Amino acid sequence: MTESSYLIPTLTTARLKLEPLSLAHSQGMFEMWREDAVQEFSGPAQDEGGFQIHLPARTPADSDGLIRFWLKAAKDGWGFRWAILLRANEAFVGHIGFNALAACSELAYHMNPAYWGHGFMTEAALVAIDRRRQEGADEIEAFIEPKNSGSVELALRLGMNATGTFSEGAQRYRMSLINSSFNSSINSPINSLTHGEA
Image (tube, rainbow, N blue to C red; front, side, top):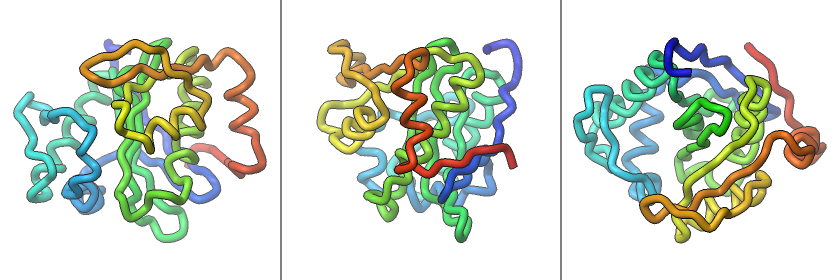
């Protein structure tokens, strides 16, 4: 998917709305990316022009560089981010998306620590992965540093398996979208997911 722009749909779940990340989310991105805990396991970041972004963010201009990076990625057709918002009050929770849009798509996400521990990222990840499955992806991967226990737990909860292969200190986790185990987790009453395009 590198020849054309990727049109990012808006998705909803029982508690969340995933909408295309934009500069309208500047304040929420800054509040999230100024937290040391958010960037602890993230590598260096660059803006759309390839210039280094200071993290943790010192000003909204720093985190706006991340937004512009992902806007360009979507325009170029190789990756994107959704903003994760609470449906109840439109509060910015975090972002989720894919670093690659291919048969094997790489999942990536970050969340404001104020919202950790409520199952929001599991809910967002399930609907995001299901969307990629509908678009033809047959495998999802994520690269997670071993010390990032929260993300390791999330990957396992989603049905990913550790592969034992590493890239820059992060272990590759993967899941097939062809088998039925992922599909049954989407339809689980525990998740209470409803998704559509709004």
